[in-house]
Image (cartoon, helix red, strand yellow):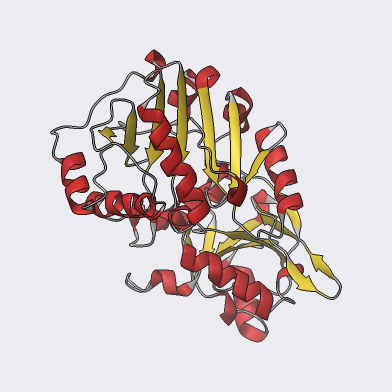
Length: 355
């Protein structure tokens, strides 16, 4: 278990490159003001919210500097006697601090590049990962000897936050021109306000960079869109991938993945299919839980929603990448996180849509 009342976290030094020098140890609250990736800010806030210590949660920017000698002695004083170290990893590095109980949380795995980097790291340096006492919200494993070594699972989720106003962009797709498609989506004036309770069913499908590069999943999405056009009583909500990028680029990225599936789609403005620039807040989803179906690619950060939502939703489905070798551990992870048996789909056999 992680002792949140005696915790210090570390972040990859390269994430600080765009900011002035912050020092090797600083208060985690300063992350909000720094030019670091949004997913890193979310990760820091996740643990800052769980921190129960009487002093502010500290961040270490360069943990590799404090492995021994006077540097390690100095760190002990700078972190106020913390005994637990949580390494925030971007998938490219894993940092351990001797003398502390080490834990790890890998963020940003919606990125295909980082996901591949982590798989490569676990394969090339398998001896590192088993040295962590626990991993947060994941079941990664490294091949050590004849059996994989898996640090204990720790589930942690933030408190539900007040979500900003959600805008719904009506879906439109011209297979001959993605640029024309984007122009249509953004060219109909102000985004619409949609009353989701008016639909008999609502399917919420968040996209990630990994998801739109997974041919099995993009085919599932495209077929679901095709079916939704002819099922006006149901609503399909697609959260755009690539957070932080310009809206037009995010729409283009989603449509590019859908186009690759080569599924015939009507060239018409959809009345019940919408693109979303950000996640829908938990309260809004809870309000429609009896008619809500959640469909997620394996790379979606499931922990951003509470167990209460997953328990209340009509259905929850997780789509695994083809060739996924950790189906059993993932099934256990999702069952614990959702409070219900995980409905897991193998993408290469899932081509009949979800709406």
